[in-house]
Amino acid sequence: MTLILPRQQLCQLPSSKLSTTGFTLIESLTVVVILGILAAIVAPTWKTLLDRQHVNAAQREILASFREAQFNAQRDLRDWQVCFRTQNGRVETLVHAQTQSDPIGCPTNDPRWRPLAGEISRNLQITNATLPIRNGYPSSRFLFNGRVTGAGATGSSLGTGRIVITPKGQVAPKRCVFISTILGTIRSAKGEQCN
Image (tube, rainbow, N blue to C red; front, side, top):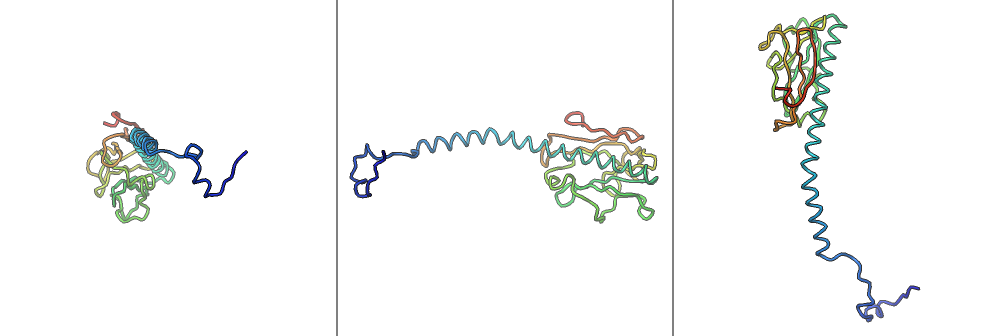
């Protein structure tokens, strides 16, 4: 049975009969300290996990861009090219067909340049690219038969090479995509395999 007393009588009751619920300052501080310690332990692991997911997504998109250009070149029986650049703090890619008016390079003002892996591109950097350079951009050109060429480029004369992606301002985790033969063999790797 619950006893309901008016407020005046409640104040006159001995303290042993009053309800003492809630947390003390020491208990509250203890909880805050424990949560801070847990956050300090989890935060670096969480950031590492996010970084790994970002470079994996970028690697998948680079691989897809190379395969798209190679497939389109064989389908259309004409040269297709993949270009990479860093613009306004974002890593961008362009997959396009070569035209007669621009037989050499990567067009700088083409509206089809897109951020690599969407908004993740702001958190990425190209740390190493040994692909042929066309108009100052690492690129790879696929001929009508799906093979690569270094024509019109400085650097690698065969058109083979690699592109390495890492989180911005870091050296790891590292992901890369290779074009390893003149036949246009495309493969991906990670970590030390990218060196």
